[in-house]
Amino acid sequence: MNKHIFSYLALGATALLMNACNDSESDLLEPKVYFESRENTLSMEDEAKTITIDLTSRLSTMTSSQVDVSYAIADPSVVDEYNAKYGTAYEMLDPSHIKLSSTTSTIPSGKLYANNVKLELSDMETVEEGKAFVVPIRVQSASVETLPGTSIAYFFLSKPVKITKVGTFNSNYISIRFPAGTYFSSFTYETLIYVNYLSSNNTIMGTEGVMILRIGDAPGTPYNYLEVAGGQHYNATEGLKEGRWYHVALTYDQPSGRTVMYVNGTKWAESAWIIAGFDPNSDVGFNIGMLPGFQWGTRPLRGYLSETRVWSVARTENQLKQNMLSVDPKSDGLALYYKLDGSEIQEGGVIKDAARGINGTTNGIRITTLDTPIAIN
Image 1 (cartoon, helix red, strand yellow):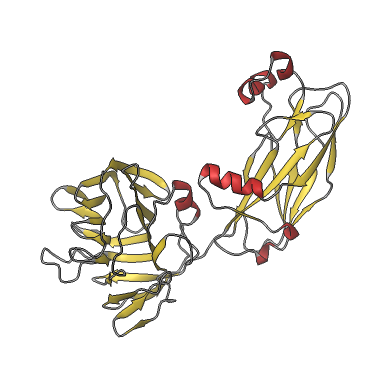
Image 2 (cartoon, rainbow, N blue to C red):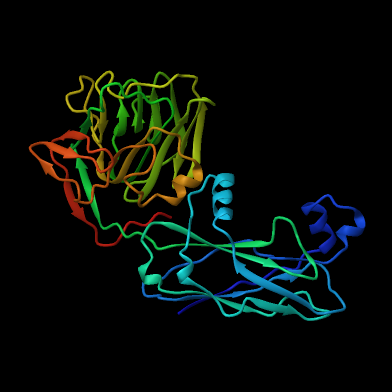
């Protein structure tokens, strides 16, 4: 059994309330009940079937009489509101997994904190890997008001995905011909990448001469720097290291003209490109891992790729962070998806993607089993 105990920091009541609302000075001094820790991330161990949390709320200022509080699982609409506000994609955990040891508690007179209630999450072994879940708990009291914006505590959890099979790239490639008429205005490239050896120009993915994400470019970019090249160029100002897994992503939001490079869900570089978009089938077409037959050099990647995706939308930073190791193949806007774990069938120089069933041509991708699962630090 996992047990998570959240300790709370005592804050100055008046200062906190001044930031929380614009009520009158007298109202600011009225006691209010709230959750001090609004967002909590729970770790899930492989063998853990149950997670137990000590849940408590507090008052903004002490009272001379006992205050009764009640707890309840919040309505799913609060999860929708949270996702809309922060660009996340949390799913509400099935209420059948959620149990409160009591729906009520008390804050004794002259005290700030309510007596603990146990929040128990059960059957965790049945929770799907890779999905991000949230448990929203609401506090309220019949005798005092709640502090606006802090009456719901969110408990986030996800079962880590274990990736142990990946695609080997060493002068290997996938060339994609998207359906006729495909045009990306906004887009996202993303993949897990591990480089054994960096040369002067290493192809990750994209349309050469139009919109490509690569590592290095002689002579302009240091050999280990991420670079975006096409109508314009820009690069990161920090290098990738050999022998290490990364999640790398490139997004372009056409309405704002903002293009951003992310590494492990963190922005590494950005630029402003005012373009309408691009045709991924133009020039030499869209390629992953190498540019086969390219007259200026094939520019191979020497290492491994996994979870390689192309989207017809600009994914947010939170979406990238939440879905590094897995994503639903039927996700809106997912235009191309190679898991590269052996699940894609390779026959006669063809490999079919998991999202749209697009046939990519390939010289063969060997699937390698890792000694330890991929870890992104």
